Amino acid sequence: MYIGLDLGTSGLKGIVIDDAQVVLAEAAAPLDVQRPHDSWSEQRPADWITAAEAVLDSLATQVDMSAVRGIGLSGHMHGATLLGADDAVLRPCILWNDTRSAIEAAELDADPAFRRLTGNIVFPGFTAPKLTWVRKHEPDTFKKVAKVLLPKDYVRMWLTGEHVAEMSDAAGTSWLDVGARDWSDKLLSATGLTRDHMPRLVEGSAVSGKLRAALGSRWGLGDVVVAGGGGDNAASAVGVGIVKPGQAFVSLGTSGVLFAASAAYQPDAASAVHTFCHALPDTWHQMGVILAAADALNWWAGVAGEDAASLTGSLGALQAPSRTLFLPYLGGERTPHNDAKIRGQFLHLDHATDRTAMTRAVLEGVTHAFRDSFDALTGTGTRIVRLIGVGGGTRSDYWVQAIATSLGLPVDLPVAGDFGGAFGAARLGLMAATGAGVEVCGTPPIARTIEPVAALRDDFDAAHARYRAGYAALRGIA
Image: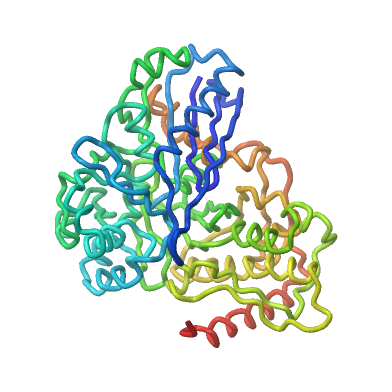
């Protein structure tokens, strides 16, 4: 058997699969985000360990764990987990959707070496500008930094005692030479760091270490290897079989991602499309990233005083977008704008606008943001012929059909779409333990396919054009 652990922003999920990749057990534990100031987003690494313990405790009550041979890890990317010389956490982890380092990111991005070596814009959410911010605003903390770990790699350190990262997650730091798949001494030096501050690198399907005996005895585990794993989106791609050119998925999680696999390193930084290493050797990927997808719906549900499922479950059949627009930029936006200052907006409200109309506008706004990413990806020459949908937001057929219609592509929904990252992590654990290759990364069973509504395509095109005009009109307004 093989365990997959997926450290998400809102919770940690775990599954156990067997050699046939059948899910035998699953569990989840919630996590909170702290926002002490505007544009800040942090978590306590100790909470990740508490959540991992709860998940593994639950899994151990569901199956006999003695047959487990490998563990794979997935997690939200870009987080800056700062450790002192004794591996003690120096401050709360600065998360992927924290934009406090916008000034520092722009300063680093002005150095052409960053785009040339990483293939990406230096976004405020990436790890390197966060360390530059700490160096400037918390110098005493910066001086104590001995190791910088990404979030899932802190969980790995707890599991194995090792400081290790893998290529897909490391590619989102702005310190990795993405083409060479190695840390760049030049880029590290530009932020006051050296290779000694970085964890050792492995491929996602390789062994990164072994489970500590004390933890193994707690859950009845024996000789277990821990795979390199993957950043959340790369692991989700492994989980749903997006490992070859032309394959893509759309993720409606806290953030939104349009992800396409590639057999070659083909960056186009100016488009704000991310070009990263995949979690598999000799493979890369491109993705457009929306900072608030399901997060936007959850925000609106809180404001409306209703749970998200109730808000979306009563919408009925897909309709043409109304005049009401929602821009889902609650914490800025990445693709295609790279704009940390823009904020969310409702536009064109009138006396007839009610809660249902505003709910539809929120779903449509995120849909338009996905269309922005789709246009950016395909503008680089990436070809997408079909999508697999993953993430909690795919529970809303209305939302998925809106995306299918806007992009003009059918969306396949797997049987267990909410466990893409954990399932991919478990697959990587299987690969590390057995030496298996990409052949184990097939498409999971598809529950159903959501087709575009061709009759509404022009309406969605027109609404997207108004959405783009709305951003252009509001850009620069603080």
